[in-house]
Length: 305
Image 1 (cartoon, rainbow, N blue to C red):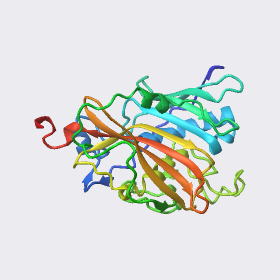
Image 2 (cartoon, helix red, strand yellow; image 1 turned 90 degrees about the horizontal axis):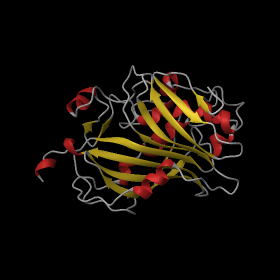
Image 3 (cartoon, helix red, strand yellow; image 1 turned 120 degrees about the vertical axis):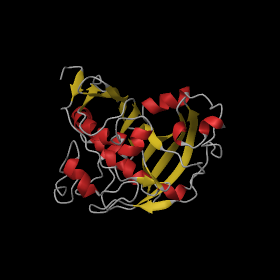
């Protein structure tokens, strides 16, 4: 650690999605599927790395980070089980509400880059990594997997979801919060109902990395018109707490909208903005912006169309 940069310990995140299923097939987190697509093994889910930033950002901004922090990242290189990863935070100037963040493997290979921001007293946030990336996107030239999608399209259903401590989070996330906390890279007494009574909020909070799990838990209900089967991965992710934290066992309403469509040489992407709302008041509690990148070479006959 220097005066300018905070760095965490090297951690070895665990793979928990080897049995993930979506669209009737296994995901890129399955070793055989990953190898078929040219990867060494099934990658660890990107949000797993978010936990490593939490203690560093709490050092910068205190417990306000849990209530109105935003972590915004572009994933650069995949990690597999056995890789060691370190998180870095560029310490902001006194009073500043934004800073650079990044993560690297033990050998210096970049894992992700992005920003951390804290809401100002008026509730506004500084420009984030994904704000800037959305502004730079060019309209896709041709979409095949996503040809029926459009910006502004809303999910078919609005759902009510919650995350209980022992609840299995389904085919997309075949584990519980209790199981995650057994292997999470940075644990906290705030996360478990058994130890959270003395927290600032008097109850257990959902860890930052698990907010994306909560947001995606019922994502099938959106019924996005994606052609398939095609294997996808997370290319960009932003989790923003508007009025946090989110609580274990608390029901929330979920609403989704397509924020952008994009294309690269290897992928077609749809960017989903998920709003997490108070069930009773409809007040916005948090948002998740996720770039679902579908691998072109996983879609049968893509090169022949």
